[in-house]
Length: 173
Image 1 (cartoon, rainbow, N blue to C red):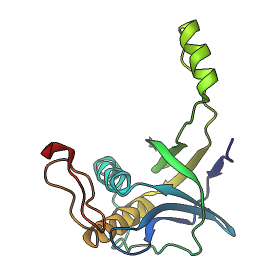
Image 2 (image 1 turned 180 degrees about the vertical axis):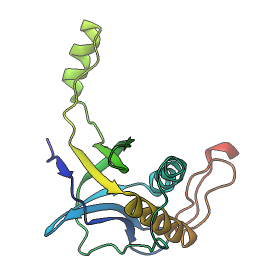
Image 3 (image 1 turned 180 degrees about the horizontal axis):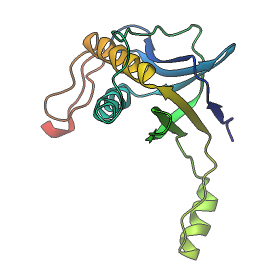
């Protein structure tokens, strides 16, 4: 199982990409002091998280000042790959709590045994829990918008990224 992380006093939170357009790897990065963690994330997940955070921000106090994009700290070496993302709000503290879960891989033998028993197979997944101020959430949105403005537009038929060599759209079959 991969390592889990929690940042309660987050002082660095961002998304970023490394590589050539069409072949970039996207990262979600969080840190507290000298401790920094990066996880691999899909471009669409970054955009969806930013869009959702925008709607959450409507219920929180406005951030002070103009949000500025936050740069990725390199080297960004991913601990694991992002699967599910959940967002919560701590209204008493006016903070956003982000729970990011690793993609769960299931052992085939365990999956067969679970299926025979009529139960869900267990997956051991790591988590990244990040507590964000409204300013940090607003900066993440600004960072995401900047990242997406540099990205290739998704395929108009299927929504997938065309990559550097185009793509074979499944909708054209």
